[in-house]
Length: 64
Image 1 (tube, helix red, strand yellow):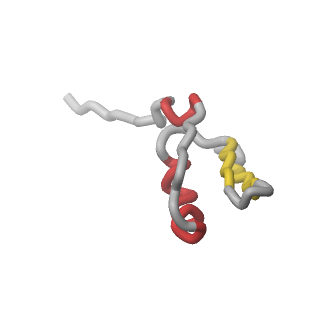
Image 2 (image 1 turned 120 degrees about the vertical axis):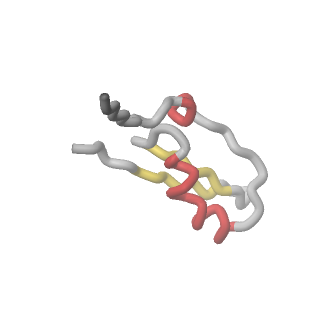
Image 3 (image 1 turned 90 degrees about the vertical axis):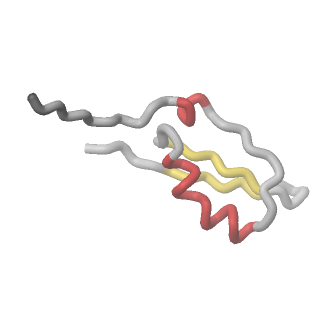
């Protein structure tokens, strides 16, 4: 069973918005919040957590 995924949205006093994604690995985090980013407007700064750089599980099958 896969773990839970959470997106925390922080709206700062200066109007900037931060997303903190928990439970994500690899680039799936970007796919899941792209609509939110587009709705808010211009993307100014991206800080990636170490989990972003972890490979997603890939299952390979080999036939002989």
